[in-house]
Image 1 (spheres, rainbow, N blue to C red):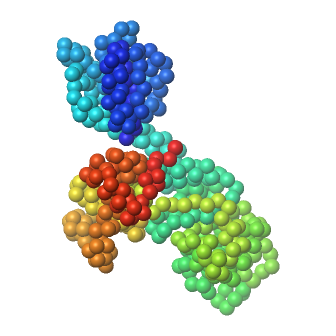
Image 2 (image 1 turned 180 degrees about the horizontal axis):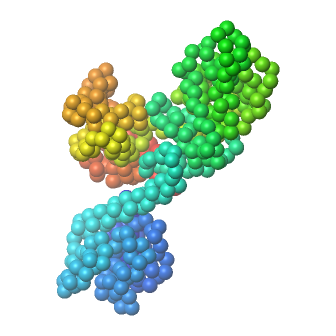
Image 3 (image 1 turned 135 degrees about the vertical axis):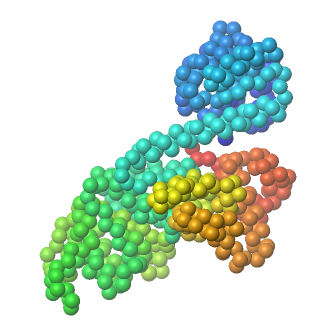
Length: 450
């Protein structure tokens, strides 16, 4: 929730008192005696809440409300009314005010309304940003969904490098969506109308992968009766995606390095090279730097591929995206199988948030499809398919894991602010500190990036 508040009131004593109340609760408060300077600076990017008295000279609260909503009709504006101003308050609500408070009001009531108004404004701005980003992703290709800061940063990086004349290395655990990211880069680049060729280096037998990649001439080896164009040449003009690059045999890595350096490919059984104009995107679920240091992956190939590096966060590090992603997968599966979409209960949503998702987004998508196809028989309601891995843990391990998740989630929701996390968890400050120390949790890791 945004902590910015603008408060407009022509009475200094009221301004100072209300401002102090909000500042004690960590709000960033700006005080004004008139609405005029606020209107002069206000724009549709304002992140917080506006509180204004109705009865003011020069520009009254209703006039201010109309002018402010003309700048942005989704601003969160709270009006303060006297005992005899209820009809004006009703008019304000009709015009689009978020709420009104009748004087005198309690501190708790004020803070509750301000918090709800701030939450609504934050959600509105997040949805706007998501719509803008989705519009930037418009077209037939895949979309990368999510509001988590790490996903927002990923989208910004991909948008920035999509047309860069450089090869790309994608790092991510199994199921995080490495091929989707590769397809996004291709489909939103200047190569979008050229081939996108994907090959899984770990799924092809070592005896076949060289001929698959490089192709061969007729008679190049026993059984090569017809000339075959390799995957690399087939991707000419477009994008070659090499998934599980860590599985590529060492001997083949030498040939791949030559392709990257010379932009030529030499099919098996010939000395003639084919010139290439291809972008290569490689993906790995392992740390190639470590494998390179151990001699299990060529360091020259690693450095050549790692010019532009992209990291996809695991789902457990972006749990705030899970409800939206799950609903999106349910809608997609319902459309594909012509089945009425299933409504997700709060209890089910909580189960989704408590799970660690070792299979990442792929596991989440599979569960959504299973729920659409099987309903109650999917095992979702009893949690058997969400927590099968938990049976391997002792009771103390499960308690520690649950405690760690609760504290991290609370800190994430409140951007690392200890007071708010402490209140949500119902813990004494020292108890929260002790648990953070126990689990090696740093509040700075949860502060929103700017």
